[in-house]
Length: 429
Image 1 (spheres, rainbow, N blue to C red):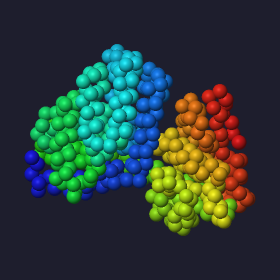
Image 2 (image 1 turned 90 degrees about the horizontal axis):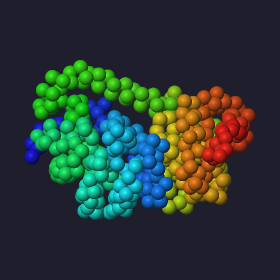
Image 3 (image 1 turned 90 degrees about the vertical axis):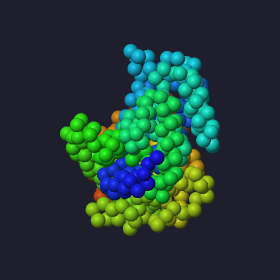
Image 4 (image 1 turned 135 degrees about the vertical axis):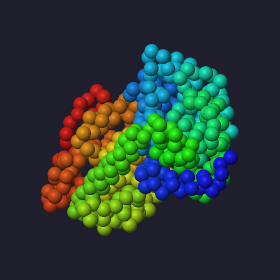
């Protein structure tokens, strides 16, 4: 059992470090929570493809890779989450790519966990999966389950396990569901005891274990390890983490710049502008987005779930009289292109009579990635409304001219690009 006063001091140190994963990932709630819905939708697609036999026999390019990419985007705490699912041909693991029975079993496991509403249902599925002894498929799957049930299932990786063993003086083993469940029980008890300084969301305490296991938070338990093996590496990690924080700030600023330019254009064209609810307080070069946009979304008659999604779309243009949404823009500086497509698609499906121009706004270096996503057979087969895309450089270069000479949203047709399906070809419009 952890000593209460000592553990509270550990948590205080963890929360007080502005470059800890608590502050750079867990407390970045708007960006973090965006991933939950994308991952859930991605898991639904994995399940559908595995059930219907359309999943294929490789991780690369699969719907499962999309899910794991969404997870690994969640800062350094999930950096290696995809490794366990890479196909290792020499070892024939994880055995869900060549063995159709195992693949269907894993798909059923994910399906049952998706629909579960109680912890006993999830634990029953874990025990069943463990009994199947699918080679190479272990507790790494808990990283997926965390994003489906963040208050019930903690994530798991090497650093978190090492941190747990050091903090609790335990000997849990990597790759063992039994060890993972022992760790989960202790984590939940501790989280319940100290919830006032942590969170009901198990990401907070998992981030603490990660910091300890990675040697970024030095305690008595890991001091010898850090001093003996990690002294030089620790400084390198700190520099790297600092650089990651700086890169995040730079990416956030580039993201805000594009939102600012879209706000300027929308206002110049005579539209009301809405910015994502979590971005209204941001500014670019002293220009606050809140000064260029409405204080909130007008009532559009959407159900609560869809309304929550629409409010997170980066920029919307609305007709002043009717509040019809004529333009919707998702700026994807570094986050998942596909999650942006999903949000735009949901908007178009919810408000088909608005005939909204849907547009992804992306850095020039991500153009090939956008084209590949828009040509994905699963996307085309789903009959999703096709968005166009706009490059950062084109938006920055032509913003002033569009503001000066544009009359309505159709002026963007000069610089946006569209992508035809798999049988077609790329073309600019």
